[in-house]
Image (tube, rainbow, N blue to C red; front, side):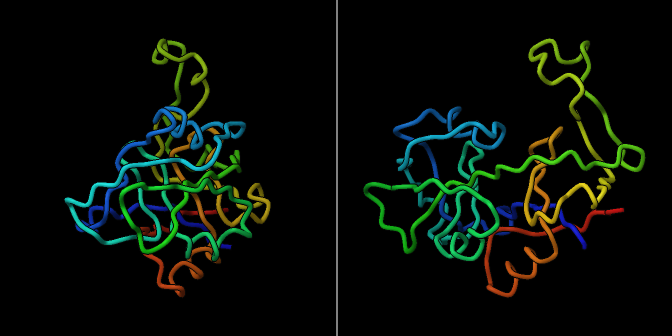
Length: 190
């Protein structure tokens, strides 16, 4: 199976609506959903919306603090992929669809470290957070061992959680249903 790295194409969507700030949770608490598989928050997440840049609603968007915001359409298409969704409310602003914050609970250790160019966090360069030691500080020429993926269609890398990897099946479903907000870059898999 082929795999792809997701790229949020917000620079291609300059008229997209902006999910601005959380009201009932700290932005740090919501950001933890992206890095901590045991982190949960009570729904709904109340957010402000800024429409000064535009009014276009995307199926996949990022908040100003990095939370992944998804449309009801996306949720319906991909909820069978073992994803978690947290309802978003936007008081004072009427959106065309319901929106959710996404949590991807699967973190997979599948990077082929011989084929991928990696820089690691070490004791010397991670004095501010010792939990980073042994994780990837940077990645280029990403190659994954596909037999480690276990037939998942969407997951994060265990040692570098900002990267989201999706299957070709996910990409085909996203494109054929005319979803917006993501681009996909093929990655090498062995």
